[in-house]
Image 1: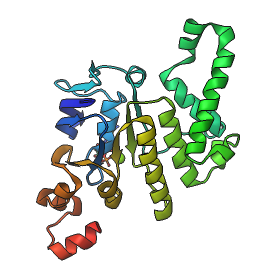
Image 2 (image 1 turned 180 degrees about the horizontal axis):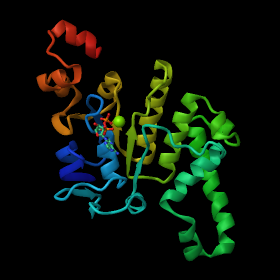
Image 3 (image 1 turned 180 degrees about the vertical axis):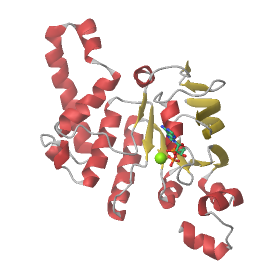
Length: 265
Ligand SMILES: Nc1ncnc2c1ncn2[C@@H]1O[C@H](COP(=O)(O)OP(=O)(O)O)[C@@H](O)[C@H]1O
Ligand SMILES: [Mg+2]
């Protein structure tokens, strides 16, 4: 298992945003996380990536490391990369520099200084830049490398966020609604690129996505949250037919015909 949580919990005042979640993810899998708005999906990411502290009694393990109390930068060095639901790009920095900043999340400059000495940094940086340019061309942004991030279209920004998250060469990549706001054509393009990146970099992926069709087409397995709890887990086909999921997700019981329409898968 590359990621494991036991009894993972997070309260905000009286609200249990995540409530005793046991979660296991094998390597090389693409796991989808779905659930209604406010069901705890983003909070789950924030706990695993160390942005939030979990409640006492929780346990989180990543690639053999107990990361229950680890801060985000330490978790990143173990190889966990994530994106945020609201894009966090450096708007006034160029596209290539945004990607370079992703690389240095995993290997900070301080580390370079210590390990290879200042005079070698320049050469090293040039080599990294070439590698990052290759990554940019892989996602189709090479021609935009010297533009500011703010000059990109919405779809291009989504691709840049993805490239930056992969720049640190993660073992596990966690994407929070990567396709939000994109047109169907752009969603298809993005998902295709995500699948190619998975193959190329040998990634394990967790994708929070509200477009059910994307989850059903892309993921090997799906975890469903409702009110902070895991209410179902299985293959896309299993989850799609689970009554608790249908009820939680759609808010009411439906007959087969209605459900097929609503899920459109
Ligand atoms: N920092 C926070 N402070 C207070 N409440 C929060 C915070 N983050 C999330 N919540 C609450 O926790 C619940 C789960 O939120 P979230 O994980 O963002 O849901 P999802 O991503 O599934 O839409 C919501 O009720 C939300 O309002
Ligand atoms: Mg969310």
